[in-house]
Image (cartoon, rainbow, N blue to C red; front, top):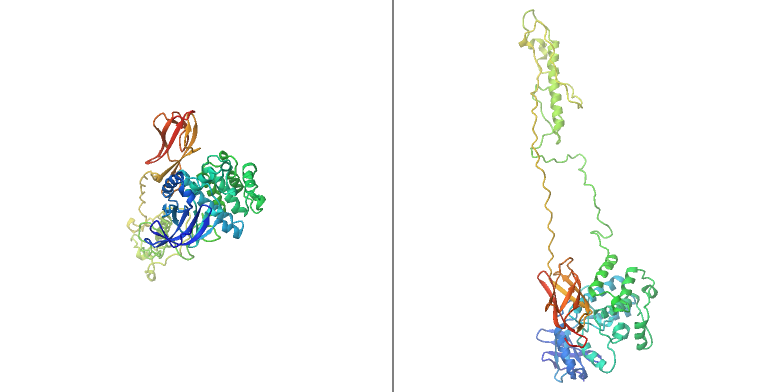
Length: 541
């Protein structure tokens, strides 16, 4: 009976039917109090009459409502209709399924497949940590919701409907799931864990990369037997364009027949996919098609320009006037080099001394016994200062100190002109340099552990005394990325119920005593707890 036009749960107005299956019907509904469209899935009456189904339905609904991963279809509400049928309310999606994309385009690009598989595994990781197994992963249950310019992956049908459907089918001897995507242990009717979902993801990846299924047959039972007994074909056999050994190895590990031969968790597969994405998503430079150059020399100053030298002094003018009677008119410009400037000053002093010496040798005596004057040695027309000699070439060695010419016997000591001798240069004492302190080492940023995910493999309802299982703790930062090297501290309550062997994020537990207990792992202030029950061989705690 169609529910179109009715109100379910007192606030969901059923507008029209979206789809119908063997175990329920999906409707488009309007939630008036928040003014939005939602999807309402109503289970059939047979599933709603079972008390066991109802109990598991309520427990599973409360767990799934806590899943916050953005790639998981959000559960909004659940309850019963006026006729007693169970229903769930989820967000309404607009887009297409992954199967629609493969059916339309065939084999999809590697980059897109890796991106979709990574998003699905990320959603599975949260669900598996909460003890929820999907059991029916397939391209029809992976939805690509168009948001702006990109597709957002959503994983559909997490658990609730399958709890009801699984119990009904088991009662009649049937197996729940889609034959083309079921794991061997699921086909054999064994207890499944998260690695069963990983096998289904391997089939999904095979289907998207090649456009084909690894096993096909005319009858569903024949497909199931191939999943149990036959080795899957390689990707290259189905699609010769796929020649990536790492991609081939990843899909082959997911399709391993034994669950112990597959990756231990969805997180482990995510680590491998991140390495593959580095190959198919190369980092781009700032300019498209061009990598930034490193180690390039700095640009030279423009021709004709003098580089600026910061020395803590006023800038030196390009021309310096000599005050010694115009003997030396100009000195070259000093450009940040004190040694060159000192050399030119010494050359100017030398020229003054040579001029004075020439004056002494060229003077003419006017009378015997009369002390000659310095002015009488020059003709009257040469009263002006002598012209400056030509500018000497830059000396390469320090000039020698000039020596005055010997005076004539009749010359008075006062009448002898001595060349100018500069005072001895004072030696500047260099201040002792203080040893440089090494720069302080940058402190490593501390990574905050925002959450801790704890898992046990194999995951069972009960364990036997003396039995062992694997433990794994994953510390995550606020952005849900793994925190490397986070110290893990394990503890068991009550003491003696079990023992923890090993250290770090991976360890083993051995159940020593019967009864219920808990295993706790802590990384800093974040802790996570697993509960267990151990029984002896007779089934007594």
